[in-house]
Length: 162
Image 1 (cartoon, helix red, strand yellow):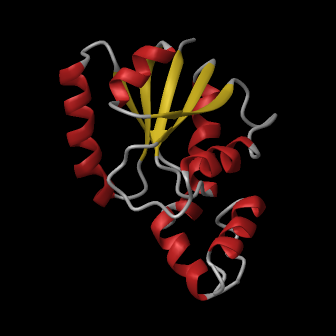
Image 2 (cartoon, one colour):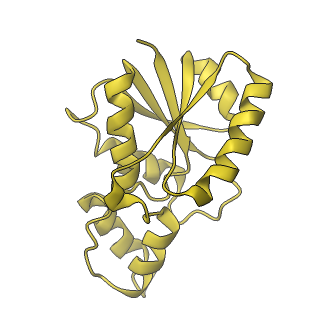
Protein backbone atom coordinates (compact mmCIF):
# COMPACT_ATOMS: atom_id res chain seq x y z
CA UNK A 1 0.00 0.00 0.00
CA UNK A 2 1.14 3.49 -0.79
CA UNK A 3 0.59 7.06 0.37
CA UNK A 4 -2.07 9.27 -1.19
CA UNK A 5 -2.54 13.02 -1.02
CA UNK A 6 -6.05 14.46 -0.64
CA UNK A 7 -5.70 18.20 -1.40
CA UNK A 8 -8.27 20.96 -1.14
CA UNK A 9 -9.18 24.18 0.59
CA UNK A 10 -11.60 22.47 3.00
CA UNK A 11 -13.24 25.81 3.84
CA UNK A 12 -14.87 24.29 5.80
CA UNK A 13 -14.46 20.53 5.84
CA UNK A 14 -17.80 18.79 5.19
CA UNK A 15 -19.13 15.32 5.84
CA UNK A 16 -18.72 14.75 2.11
CA UNK A 17 -14.99 15.47 2.39
CA UNK A 18 -14.75 13.13 5.36
CA UNK A 19 -16.64 10.43 3.45
CA UNK A 20 -14.12 10.63 0.61
CA UNK A 21 -11.29 10.55 3.16
CA UNK A 22 -12.72 7.40 4.77
CA UNK A 23 -12.92 5.74 1.34
CA UNK A 24 -9.33 6.72 0.57
CA UNK A 25 -8.20 5.32 3.94
CA UNK A 26 -9.63 1.94 2.96
CA UNK A 27 -7.48 1.92 -0.19
CA UNK A 28 -4.22 3.51 0.98
CA UNK A 29 -2.08 2.83 4.01
CA UNK A 30 -1.48 6.54 4.53
CA UNK A 31 -3.61 9.48 3.37
CA UNK A 32 -2.41 13.05 3.84
CA UNK A 33 -5.24 15.57 3.75
CA UNK A 34 -3.50 18.70 2.50
CA UNK A 35 -5.16 22.04 3.16
CA UNK A 36 -4.23 24.64 0.56
CA UNK A 37 -3.06 28.00 1.82
CA UNK A 38 -2.69 29.49 -1.64
CA UNK A 39 -6.03 28.89 -3.32
CA UNK A 40 -7.68 31.60 -5.39
CA UNK A 41 -10.77 31.41 -3.17
CA UNK A 42 -11.70 34.00 -0.58
CA UNK A 43 -11.69 31.71 2.45
CA UNK A 44 -14.01 32.14 5.41
CA UNK A 45 -11.66 30.36 7.84
CA UNK A 46 -7.94 31.02 8.20
CA UNK A 47 -5.86 28.02 7.17
CA UNK A 48 -4.78 27.24 10.75
CA UNK A 49 -8.41 27.04 11.85
CA UNK A 50 -9.29 24.82 8.87
CA UNK A 51 -6.45 22.51 9.93
CA UNK A 52 -7.75 22.43 13.50
CA UNK A 53 -11.31 21.68 12.34
CA UNK A 54 -10.04 18.78 10.21
CA UNK A 55 -7.72 17.36 12.87
CA UNK A 56 -10.53 17.35 15.43
CA UNK A 57 -12.40 14.91 13.18
CA UNK A 58 -9.58 12.47 12.53
CA UNK A 59 -9.77 9.31 14.58
CA UNK A 60 -10.38 5.58 14.34
CA UNK A 61 -12.60 6.00 11.28
CA UNK A 62 -9.60 7.38 9.38
CA UNK A 63 -6.67 4.99 9.96
CA UNK A 64 -3.43 6.35 8.59
CA UNK A 65 -4.85 9.81 7.94
CA UNK A 66 -3.01 12.99 8.81
CA UNK A 67 -3.61 16.63 7.93
CA UNK A 68 -1.14 19.32 6.90
CA UNK A 69 -1.12 22.81 5.43
CA UNK A 70 0.57 23.32 2.09
CA UNK A 71 1.40 26.21 -0.19
CA UNK A 72 2.25 25.73 -3.84
CA UNK A 73 1.60 23.07 -6.43
CA UNK A 74 -0.20 19.87 -5.48
CA UNK A 75 2.41 17.77 -7.30
CA UNK A 76 5.17 19.32 -5.19
CA UNK A 77 3.27 18.55 -1.98
CA UNK A 78 2.69 14.99 -3.23
CA UNK A 79 6.44 14.57 -3.80
CA UNK A 80 7.19 16.01 -0.36
CA UNK A 81 4.98 13.46 1.43
CA UNK A 82 5.94 10.57 -0.87
CA UNK A 83 2.46 10.20 -2.36
CA UNK A 84 1.93 7.99 -5.38
CA UNK A 85 -1.65 9.19 -5.92
CA UNK A 86 -3.81 12.28 -5.60
CA UNK A 87 -7.34 11.77 -4.30
CA UNK A 88 -10.09 13.92 -5.76
CA UNK A 89 -13.77 13.76 -4.90
CA UNK A 90 -16.36 13.85 -7.66
CA UNK A 91 -19.90 14.75 -6.68
CA UNK A 92 -21.54 15.25 -10.06
CA UNK A 93 -20.71 15.35 -13.72
CA UNK A 94 -20.21 19.12 -13.40
CA UNK A 95 -17.08 18.45 -11.30
CA UNK A 96 -15.53 16.21 -13.94
CA UNK A 97 -14.47 18.84 -16.50
CA UNK A 98 -12.44 20.86 -13.99
CA UNK A 99 -11.02 17.79 -12.26
CA UNK A 100 -10.07 16.22 -15.60
CA UNK A 101 -8.09 19.32 -16.57
CA UNK A 102 -6.32 19.37 -13.20
CA UNK A 103 -5.50 15.65 -13.44
CA UNK A 104 -4.04 16.13 -16.91
CA UNK A 105 -1.88 19.05 -15.79
CA UNK A 106 -0.67 17.12 -12.75
CA UNK A 107 0.18 14.17 -15.01
CA UNK A 108 2.07 16.55 -17.29
CA UNK A 109 4.06 17.83 -14.31
CA UNK A 110 4.67 14.36 -12.82
CA UNK A 111 3.88 11.34 -14.96
CA UNK A 112 4.43 8.98 -12.02
CA UNK A 113 1.63 10.52 -9.96
CA UNK A 114 -1.84 9.06 -10.49
CA UNK A 115 -5.14 10.82 -9.83
CA UNK A 116 -7.84 8.69 -8.21
CA UNK A 117 -11.42 9.94 -8.36
CA UNK A 118 -13.68 8.86 -5.49
CA UNK A 119 -17.38 9.56 -5.16
CA UNK A 120 -18.89 10.30 -1.76
CA UNK A 121 -22.05 8.67 -0.52
CA UNK A 122 -25.02 9.90 -2.58
CA UNK A 123 -26.37 11.87 0.39
CA UNK A 124 -23.41 14.23 -0.08
CA UNK A 125 -23.55 14.66 -3.88
CA UNK A 126 -24.99 18.18 -3.62
CA UNK A 127 -22.80 19.24 -0.70
CA UNK A 128 -20.08 21.81 -1.23
CA UNK A 129 -18.26 24.10 1.17
CA UNK A 130 -19.71 27.09 -0.71
CA UNK A 131 -23.29 25.89 -0.27
CA UNK A 132 -22.66 25.07 3.38
CA UNK A 133 -21.39 28.60 4.02
CA UNK A 134 -24.32 30.14 2.17
CA UNK A 135 -26.92 28.17 4.16
CA UNK A 136 -25.09 28.80 7.46
CA UNK A 137 -25.04 32.52 6.70
CA UNK A 138 -28.85 32.65 6.75
CA UNK A 139 -29.87 29.99 9.27
CA UNK A 140 -28.62 28.18 12.35
CA UNK A 141 -30.38 25.02 11.15
CA UNK A 142 -28.32 21.85 11.50
CA UNK A 143 -28.18 20.34 8.02
CA UNK A 144 -26.26 17.26 9.12
CA UNK A 145 -23.78 17.97 6.32
CA UNK A 146 -20.86 19.10 8.47
CA UNK A 147 -19.29 17.77 11.67
CA UNK A 148 -20.48 19.38 14.93
CA UNK A 149 -17.26 21.33 15.43
CA UNK A 150 -17.64 22.88 11.97
CA UNK A 151 -21.32 23.73 12.56
CA UNK A 152 -20.33 25.53 15.78
CA UNK A 153 -17.39 27.31 14.12
CA UNK A 154 -19.67 28.50 11.30
CA UNK A 155 -22.15 29.90 13.83
CA UNK A 156 -19.38 31.85 15.56
CA UNK A 157 -17.75 33.04 12.35
CA UNK A 158 -21.01 34.13 10.74
CA UNK A 159 -22.56 35.70 13.86
CA UNK A 160 -23.91 39.22 13.12
CA UNK A 161 -21.44 40.84 15.54
CA UNK A 162 -18.39 39.42 13.70
